[in-house]
Image (cartoon, rainbow, N blue to C red; front, side, top):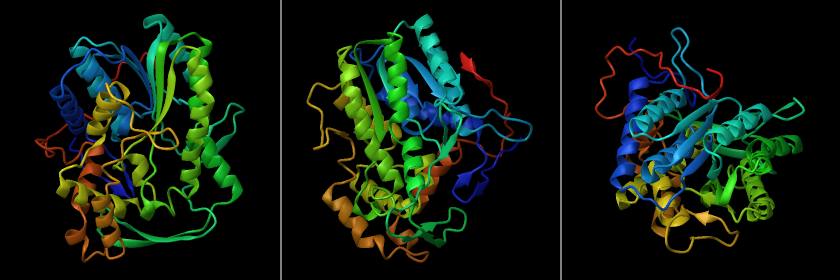
Length: 399
């Protein structure tokens, strides 16, 4: 069948298998162009491994260090005329590339919040790898089923004061007004339960309890802080409270990780187009301005450039970590450069449908969004027939 992007609101409901595979190939090529090192982790567990920074971390460690990787994700295979989710196709492409290199790769498809997936992952690690040297937690989900069976959902809302702003319609390029009422206490606490650090702690406890973390092992959790223009909806909103909870979780994990001579890190990454970021009100304008400023300055990075630089210069680099007063490793230093943020601030209030091309890189933002789903990837023939059915060898979970 011929597959085209189908966008509803901020969601693209189709994905292109060949385009997703080419996107993975491009990321692999970038990592390999940076050179293969032998001073990184041998065995890596990535929780949330099928897209964004999680997939990039899997590619960076596998093809940058030759790591064996276990990827946990929750993706949908194709069914009838419905395509698979982009993460399904990208995991299939990663698996094929990794196996062609002779790299161990295991895939677990299911709800990472569940105890069943935690147990299955631990069983696999114990059987195949023995222990893990690096645990990357990069999970983004709108809801979470708690151990008691109840379900809590996140709410992307401001706290205290209503939020008035705009977002860019991906289809029409029009600016649409946004008005969000502040979250109530339950919405704040539920968002923290879904997007905060509690499940990260549960994963580390499960691994430690089974003796599966190697001596000197490391765990990381990615976060985003943003700049002042995004703070009303992000840093000072419900999602900001959830991100603050990562700092609490990191502090709680210091002692347990020290029991194996290991460390826990919260890592602040730059703003990028991911499925999670595209759902946050107002971020399309900010990221479009940011892309224009950073590309003009020659310092723009995608997920794969960020994770590769993080592993090579910070986590497994020879120098000291670049940390802030909260002990977080900072990878957003280029985004927060004075000249970049000055450009964003100067143009923030003047963005309109008429000025979109002159002041922002909305075209680049939209291309990055479509590339997530395998569309607008260079060198692809999108008029060619493709088979939406692409298998993945799963070691646990369900297809």
